Image (cartoon, rainbow, N blue to C red; front, side, top):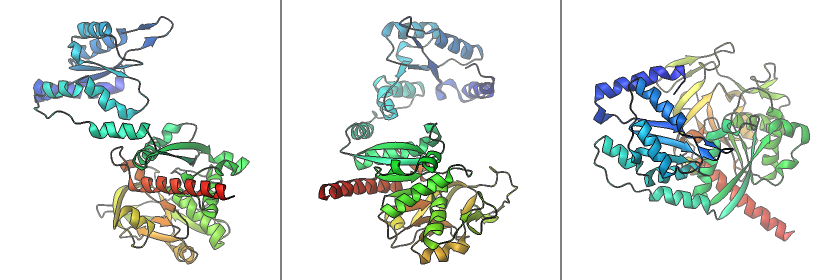
Length: 405
């Protein structure tokens, strides 16, 4: 409450309550209950004022979800209920926890699910949260541990990669591993070298835009390729793996993406000017096109080649979401494949490379799409699970080599 931008949405849900009937709408208000450390007190006034603002525009919350540092004392719950015109049982504490996956149990224990069902007159079976409990137990009791280097350029703000962070943690849950993510600035690698990568069990290069930090990412990619370290490149990470391979294996000096160097003698990654979207409509773009409006966006089904690592992970078909403008240049693919580069999935119409891998490497995979968007804590994601499993295998092999030495 309080932001002018939210007023149209609040008015919409007020009208929704009128038009659909109050028995068909449940209003839950998320509100802050701050703790003033210097006074040692919880302050309920912000919540009271926030509810007062809602009631002035015609919305009476059915339940309050109170964000706090710790569970609300009963006296404070009674006070909030009294002055906000809400039943005490519907004043729910949402305190800080060390894992977001504990939140469903927290809310269930305070009967929020039953409050909502009762308000909407829904007769439902008792909630079974055993899957969530098992998930949290697996997260808190890992059997193994891996160190993964996350080489990007936005690492100072880790929420920039929130979906990837969670996808790796999901994979850790399903492989029984604690995934220690080491955020490494690719520009620092350009300056100081790859020593920081030597103790890593795997390397991941995420998506991104622009030239800054790309040479550092390619140094990390080369380290992974030459030393048998599991590698996963996502979007830009696949493109940079292709450029690194073209330069250092195929011998195409100066190979690059036209995004970074328009005059490169070997544009192994380039801007495709025309393609079919998932509805069959022709999309077009040029270097002068609007950046956001000309991306290849959304999910697209692609067949996966048999006898490939990608096939063992995905099966015969991959259907993932995209968000990019540049593509691996098909003109150079035959030269790349002659040296051991494999394209294991292509778009059905334009035959654009969707997945690349190096069959001679234990685990070296690049994908043009964003698999992190479809990872869930309950199921994980097959690509990330395979990546973390490869990291575990590499770590075990490193220990055996150290013992033998």
